[in-house]
Amino acid sequence: MGQLFGTDGIRGIANVAPMTAEMALAIGRATAHVCKRHDRRHRIVIGKDTRLSGYMIENALTAGICSMGVDVLLLGPIPTPAIAFTTRNMRADAGIVISASHNPYQDNGIKIFSNDGQKFSDKLEAEIEDLVATGKINAIRPTADEVGKARRIDDALGRYIVFCKNTFPDALTLEGLKIVIDCANGATYKVAPIILAELGAEIIAIHNEPNGKNINDHCGSQFTQDLAREVVRVGAQVGLAFDGDGDRLIAVDETGHELTGDHLMAVCARDLKEQGRLRNNLIVVTPMSNLGLRMALDDLGIRTLESAVGDRNVLELMQKEGACLGGEQSGHLIFLDHHTTGDGIISALQFLAVMQRTGKTASELGRIFHPAPQQLINVEVSRKPPLEQVAAVQQAIQTAERELGNSGRVLVRYSGTQSLCRVMVEGSSAEMTHRIATTLAGIVKQELG
Image (cartoon, rainbow, N blue to C red; front, side, top):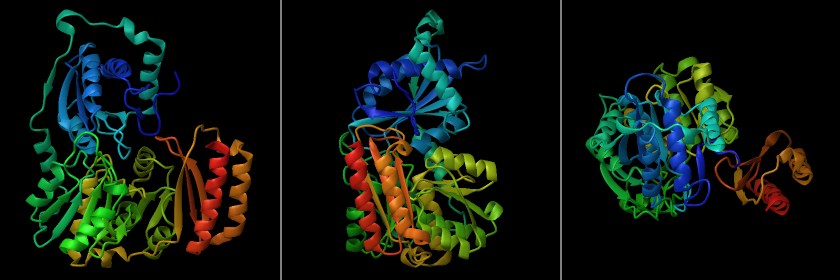
């Protein structure tokens, strides 16, 4: 068995190893075992997005956890950040998310939160992997009255709605705003319209009728075309796009122009600084963030530190350096004063608060920086050898970097969750950027496709 956990939990095609019912059962058993650290009754929260395969994996995990003498609290379809919140709120020992985030419906995944609402540590993930791979977990079997039981938590959505609304300033309201939201036929389909409407906005929701197979299907934070068209058609002030599990946000201004995670971070960083709430005058970004963002923040006198790609890495550096804001261009933003993980709805509320506080339109706020021309190409790969060992790719990167000089940069890396290699190029002109990125992507495909 290869390594189970990637950069964001376990992920793969549902009903194909490792995302099988048998593996979910074993992971449930191992997770329950590593969580048994005290003498009182243990509890693990389970939530999921709207994928068809969620039923299969949910039941297998539940059986595994109960077989280890640990109780299960079932939340049903709910955003990933709501599971992190509920784990803390209900004093559970862990929270398990069944989701493949922004991936298509055929995929599914398992990620685990510890009792403090943060992702499981590498050490605990390694312990689970060892228990499953060696079969040690098979010998540990409580019996009779020691097995666990499962029950549904009917008010989980209500608890999370209150939690999110409490992150929006008491002195403000969303009255007067017409907002289009794209729920990606995913986990935000129930809660996002309720939260925004209860704060006073007029809500038009699209892609909010999940059927188990339409999650992320040309909608949500990765595909904002439908959202942009609807915002312009109905004359809305802003559009908000979430991904399938609700931890990302991409916005669209009133003209239909997309505002990436970089735009949202810049807007919120400036607002926090003006309020004296930007701790250590710092935000954390990743190598994927646009050069224009760094230059804009520098002009505002705001420091940036760069973590490795991935929300866990962003959070780790934020905590180490005392930052309250960090995130990724993809829309995964962490407002640490409000939550321990990225939350698309909370991110939306912070951006909407800036709109309401300043009286500025989304397009005015979005002009906070001019992105450097950037091209990102995802190349499907059949294998993932260390890139530094692929001579042709390294030579192509060096050639590109020489041509770009100091006016751009190249980033080539594997996706941690999909069979993809991401080729990102920034340059001084769109033509140059496109040409270099296309050439690089072609060489990656030739060598690794």
